[in-house]
Image 1: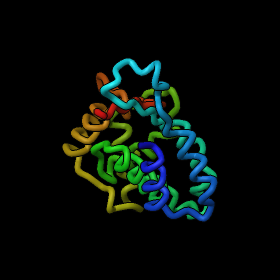
Image 2: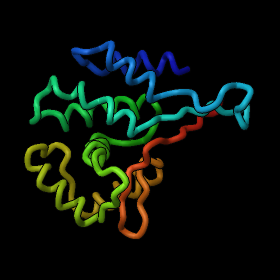
Image 3: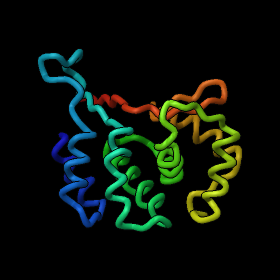
Image 4: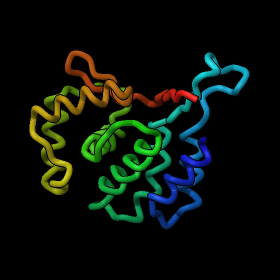
Length: 165
């Protein structure tokens, strides 16, 4: 299953450093448990290490220049999550990409929206209104890509995805 996922992601994403991108993908998307340790043999569990992806992606985004790095990051993340069958859109991936450097610091929804509104001036295709923005954050939380409690937002460094065999 994972080999097909890797191939599809590589086919969709075009980077000059294709070998580096492939190594990054293979190191960030892995089988969560070996066959004998799988808690339930009816499921296949995949681990997607989001923070490791962002850390490794820094060298790849430089080929696009400073003004296009957000677009490159959002597109790559969208291709990966789409292939992993996570229901997200490109605007959600743009928000995730913006959260990449926040580390362990928590971010208030209003502060994040203010930051993003400034960025959306350069990237209007990802812009959204206030109400859909709140719903988008809740969607990212349901997909376990962020922690979102009491108005605080924190990026999950890694996510487990389970697929029925």
